[in-house]
Every structure is written in C-alpha cells, then in structure tokens.
Length: 383
Ligand SMILES: Cc1cc2nc3c(=O)[nH]c(=O)nc-3n(C[C@H](O)[C@H](O)[C@H](O)COP(=O)(O)OP(=O)(O)OC[C@H]3O[C@@H](n4cnc5c(N)ncnc54)[C@H](O)[C@@H]3O)c2cc1C
Image 1 (cartoon, rainbow, N blue to C red):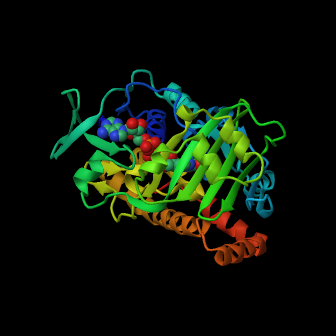
Image 2 (cartoon, rainbow, N blue to C red):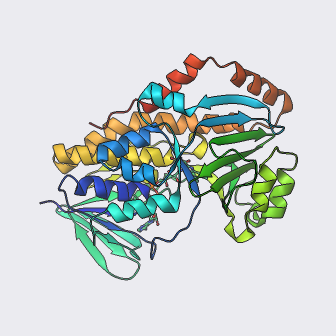
C-alpha cells in the first residue's frame, strides 16, 4: 500500500490524516512544533467546515469543543448596527450548523486525539525536499530524513515545500496589521451568544465568545508592513487606538495581559494556478492562504482534507492530486479574492466612503446575503 506523508500537523494536516486513516489509508504527519501547546486565539468555523467534518466523520467531536452563537453583528464604533445575521435562522435554512467558534488550541487537541496513535511526529521541521521517480525524501532540521511514496504539504502560508516548488510565490501584505487575544472570563453585561465586528476608520475590532466563558477578540489597523511600533503595541496602545469604541472593547483589552496579546501582519498568497506537482500536492494555507476577513482560511483547509481523502480513496495518487487541484482551485481562488476585496472595504479610512459603505451594507437585501452564503456553503467534496 502507498505510504502518504503529511508535512505540517496544523488544522489542515491533522484533518487530512484523520480523514485518510478513517478510510483505511495509512498517513504519517510530521510537525515542526515540539508539542501541541494551548497557544493561539479563537476561530470561527462556518457551515462549510462543519459539512467537511461531517464528511470526514468527526463533526460531533469538533462541534462539542466549540460554542454555537445566535447572532453576528456589524457595528459602528458608537454601537449602531450596520448588519445583522441570525445564525439560528441560517442553520435552519441551510440544514447545517452555521458558524460556531472554537479556541484554536481546543481544535488542535481534538484533532490530535482523533488521529491514529503514533501517527503524528512532533519536533520534525522539514528543511529540504527531494522528489525522485520512486518517491519523495524529506530532510529534517534534526538531521534525520524520511522517505515516502507521496507527500502532502500542509505546512502553512510560509510552506517550505511551496517555496521549493514555486519559489516566486511569496506572501503579500494586505496593508493592515492585527492583534488577537483571549480573555479568561467575560465582561459583565456582555451577551455570550453574540459575535460582532466593529468598523472604525482604518481599524476594526471583533468580539467572539468562546466556550468556557472566554472571549476571543481581534483588532486590525492600517499600518506599514512589519512596523516596530505595531509589534510593540500592547494593552495600553490598543486602548488608545480603540478609544471611544462601544462596550465591551475596552473591557476586553483590560482583561488581556500584555504577554497574551498576539501580533501579526495580515498576509495572504496571490492565487496560484497549480497545487499538484507529481508526487507532491499542496493543501490549506500552503496552497491558498487567505486574509481572515471572511473567516474562511481554516474552513478551506478542512474542505481540502475531506476532498483530498475522497480523491485518494477513489483514484491513483497522482490522478487524485490532479483532480483535487482542478476541483479546488476555482473555489479557493474566488474566496481568496473576495476576502482580499472585503478587507479593503472594511479597512476604509475616508469618512465619506465609510458612510456610503455603511449605508450600502444596511440596504443589502436579505436575499443577496442568502445567495452569498449559499455559494459559500454549497460545496462538494467529490472531485
Ligand atoms: C488573524 C487571523 C484570524 C483567522 N481567523 C480565522 C477564522 O475565524 N476562521 C477560519 O476558518 N480561518 C481563520 N484564519 C485562518 C486560519 O488560521 C488558517 O487558514 C489555518 O490555520 C490554515 O491551516 P493549515 O493547516 O493549512 O496551516 P497552519 O494552521 O498554519 O498549520 C501549518 C502547520 O505546519 C507546521 N509547519 C510549518 N513549517 C513546517 C516545516 N518546515 N516542517 C514541519 N512542519 C511545519 C506548523 O508548525 C503548523 O503546525 C485566521 C488567520 C489569521 C491570521
């Protein structure tokens, strides 16, 4: 039987390992990190990710580790509503749970637990890859190597494997930077069933309740790339940047210790035309990293896992990789582009344009929103 190696034990890599193993296809994961620590912030997983986990057969375990929300709001800094989505109504309409939130570390924990014992190897950072006629050889930073028949690169946006195969694809900066945090506890008076995103001039603040009375928040700001002031900005600076924003923005910042604030610039990959390279295929962020504006990066990695596992169960590996590429490239390209454009609109700074944008969002007919969601959630995992 063919031997499949997955490089990168993140959301995509672990989901694929489980999907393959449940089909009786052995898969080994090599992950650079020394262990799965309770790090990171929150994630919103939309109905398409839930559908993909249903396809893989683990949606109950994953959903049980998260929190279902009732409403999502778009707001202005003074708290006026720009848009409103009734999540329960969407769940009823589309017949699958629409949007739940989960701590990234909790998702990793569930996936790691569901992967076959002994199939995930940590402290294995690949530094080189060689494809030959009979297989693929990975070389790791610790000097060891592994030979496999086929390699699935799920090693994230800075993928070493992609850099090797397509050196010209480098991440592009979206023009805004981002801070994230998770509070232990919820500000008194905050609604635990509502998430919101508030749009100020060139800045946004998102509030996302998590299970266990925790709250995930994110904050964005238009800024130069890799700016030292942004890197150093902590609670005090963020309170200044988001001064005047409605409750519970300041309260959440005050509940987050400086050493728990994560910072990174927002980057993505300009859509690529190829994911399959003979015995190697790229998936997840390694193939189609997106800006987080639509909350779809992890969802697409999970969709990839369900699709690739179905392809490998039905076709010879190289044919499966090609079919996966054909099946996935249009959808992922469209989501990456939509998310990029949405981010530009959401990060507007000009007051007149902001007023026009907010008015346009308030007037969006419900039918149009439903159609957009239907397009997003109408996904097939059979290439
Ligand atoms: C601010 C922000 C908010 C987001 N919010 C959401 C959201 O709400 N919903 C959503 O769906 N998505 C969201 N995303 C996107 C989501 O985080 C990614 O799309 C998702 O993590 C991609 O999964 P992946 O498995 O492809 O890559 P990753 O999660 O990046 O995993 C890659 C793995 O590969 C390992 N690795 C890397 N290099 C090597 C190597 N050389 N050797 C071995 N292992 C290696 C890494 O350690 C890592 O474990 C957000 C992203 C950001 C930045």
